[in-house]
Amino acid sequence: MSSATPLQSSIHASPRHVLRSATAAEHARVEGITGPLTSRQAYVRYLMGSYSFRVPIERALGEGALGWPRCLDGWRPTLIAEQLQADLRDLALEGASPAPPFDLKNWNPIGVLYVLEGSSLGARLLERQVRHLGFDATFGARHLARQRESSWADFVTCLDRCSPEEFEGAAVSARATFDLVASSMSSASNALVG
Image (tube, rainbow, N blue to C red; front, side):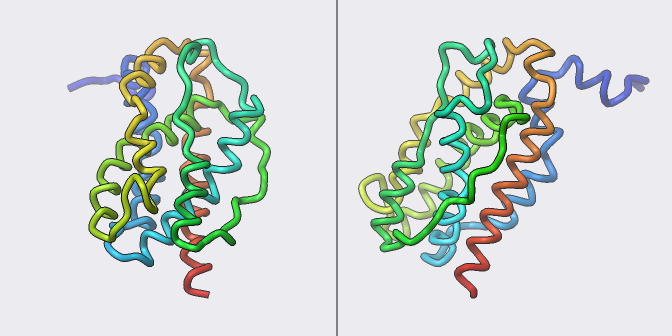
């Protein structure tokens, strides 16, 4: 039986596993809100929610508002806002709007990017689900096809190079990012019901 505390145990865990453990509840909440995309309405809700949170985050990344840790040098995230806009046009949802800009200057980009890049793993499953609804890489699901191009393995390699100083606050930022995703998805659900 080990006498190590959770914090001591996490010191020896990989950054990916630390983040996965620290965000398990928030991740489960997002999955519960999103649910399976087995109907057009579920997919529209997902698409509008994704657009709402991705645009301001991607804009902040592009403007350098989050800074850039050295451990991520040579790597760049897979951005999908343009493809999301095209997908919205395909479904005649051009009136969808992104969340208002929010202040990310105190967020750790490692935590934010953990959530964004991790979503590429789920995109593969979602792409199969929405194919049955008639959406694919040429109509309605361009963003999912783009996410498939993401290299989670490359991101994880970068995570493993992060210093403790670069990694500090990453879990807090990842949880905040998941909360933003959940809020955007819930707002999209309410907009469709209302």
